[in-house]
Amino acid sequence: MDVGRNFVSKESILTLLESMSMYKLNKFHFHLTDDEGWRLEIPGLPELTEVGSVRCHDVDERTCIASQLGSGPGSNNAGSGHYSVEEYKEILQYAQDRNIEVIPEFDMPGHGHAAIRSMEARYESLKDSDMAAATEFLLSDPDDTSLYVSIQYFRHNAINPCIDSSYAFVDKVIQEVKAMHQGIQPLRVFHFGGDEVPHGAMERSPACEAYLGHPVTPEDASMLKTEFVVRVGQLVSEAGLDFGGWEDGLMTHANEPYERADFASENVYGMPWNNIWEWGGGSRAYILANNDYNVVLAHATDLYFDMPYEPDPEERGFYWATRFTSSRNTFNYMPERVYDNMEVDLFGRPLVQEEVCASVGCVPLQPGQERFIEGIQGQLWSETVRTSDQFDFMVFPRLLAVAERGWHTAAWESEEDDAERERLRDEDWGVFANTLGYKELSRLDQLNVQYRVPLPGARFEGSVLEAATQFPGLPIEYSDDDGETWTDYMGPTTVAPDTLLLLRTRSADGNRVSRTVQITSPSA
Image 1 (spheres, helix red, strand yellow):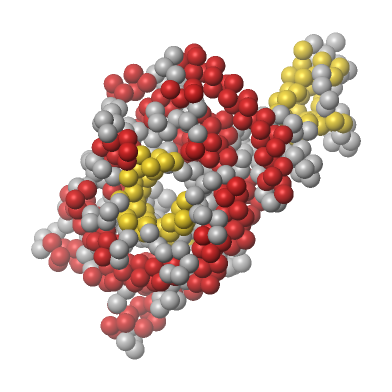
Image 2 (cartoon, rainbow, N blue to C red):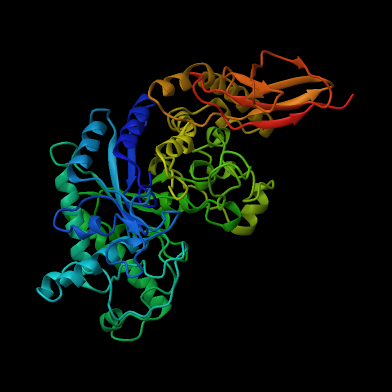
């Protein structure tokens, strides 16, 4: 769960943990920092939350991070907020009581804008009174004129790997977070993110030039990123912790993983996410596993919940990884047959696995290395999430499909005949969909989870209206007077010619409705 882009309240996190516990989801990967915000109080570094957790209009970013993602000029917005040490401990205790391990993530060296600006604000406030304290945790080279822009259009978001203060900062965070966990749920994994370090970062840094003894080349910049990752990994292992990172945090730009021997931690977890098949990154899961990395499948095409549920402009979400991810898409995901998930491209056009593999390559999982595939995780990135209801909407009910695929290998997953696999999968989906509609969504209602209520589908057979919804058992209503009155749909219904109908689905408890859809009956 990303709380960096937009903040998510403690109460929403606790409800999520309660829901996770019902479905045996036993790991909570807590993405606590990003370019847009730092969300956890770190004792001794108050600027991280005083500046880095607040968004407002300040072009110099000395009192807050610049307004973005619809935050507006003031600080009372979805982009502002943080968890105190005590609130974080409360989350830990709540998770521990439900047998859920919390894996905190502090994204670096890329996605570090909020942390960089916070430590620059610290520098400005202390430089005239205590220069040693001002520079102790600085994350940037003041004379760096590198020209780059990150994938999210930040121009100042890469922590500098050539200054010792960067590592003092990382070690400070590790030790303080480890202390927060002590006595509640001992910290086991420190996740450093590591993803999307922009090309061009560090190339005009005098500190890096001095470190290398010559001007920085693009090859040097890549090598410096490697050094940063290895050195952070060393700090993590010295703290007695396992190490975690996104796929590109543990690989070179040439798609080659760092030497596993470079990391002393007993386990190093890689989360492969970029499986947009035609881009060529779908092999990274197996490349990492073949090199003895512990792999948690996090594939964007089926497991990213910031994608819309349907290919409709009124659906919330992005579509850079896939045009949409429905609950059915997530249910269909096959963790043990990664390449067999290759069905459509970014725009929904059918893919032929043999053609894609011939074009971009499909590295096989070597015999015996399947033991390194640890599991799967769903994830929500929060750029489009501004309220707790929107948070619930994007996560549920897709998260239940993650639990189904994470804990149960269906018979159809091992079926080699495509047509037979599809038939068996359709049958299994029917059972799952009915279970949600008649049983599980009511359980979410009891927790006040504001899950997405699916839109009804409708068609006319002559003058007879037929309607259905994705989860059988949820009530459908229709209106022939522009929503003034609503009638329960009880089955095929004869409608007068040229009648405009509105239709909607109700939640299991009857308290909420979906968006409406429109259909007009045929002319006489």
